[in-house]
Amino acid sequence: MANNGKINNMLIPSVSKLPKHEKVDVSNKLQSGETSDFKKLLQDKIGSVKNDHGINLSVHAAKRLSERNLSLNNEDFFKIKDAIGKLKEKGGQDSLIITDKAAYIVDVNNNKIVTAIDKGSLSENVFTKIDSTVVV
Image 1 (cartoon, rainbow, N blue to C red):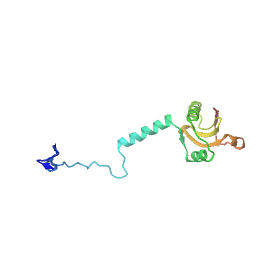
Image 2: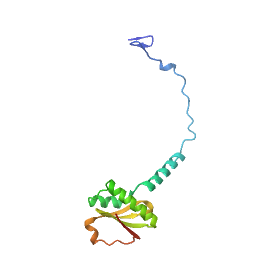
Image 3: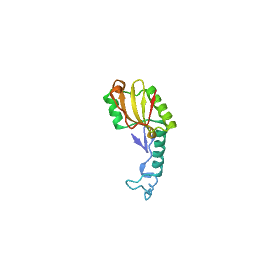
Image 4: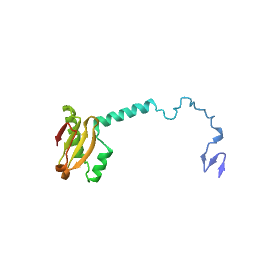
């Protein structure tokens, strides 16, 4: 039961007695399509972290990995990452990295795996437009 603004001996404040609402200035609101300085900075930082620490997969490479039942585990990831680092030091750009499970064509400058070939199909393939090879 309600008595003097209390329900079950709990004081419930009256909403009508709250202070007036203040209007918010939205004149500096972003227009559609614009990006904030913070968002630009965040995207740049994420991009640089990916380039420095990650390996990207092209759509083609992801498709080939799926078709050929290949997967990248932690060990493979770090082998490829280390190989890309060595290739960068030596000036490699479009390179072939051969592991015990597969071979990968890699765009070294963008840390991107372009395509993947399973170990069983290696002997039948011709690799063109590569400037270096690493066996890991």
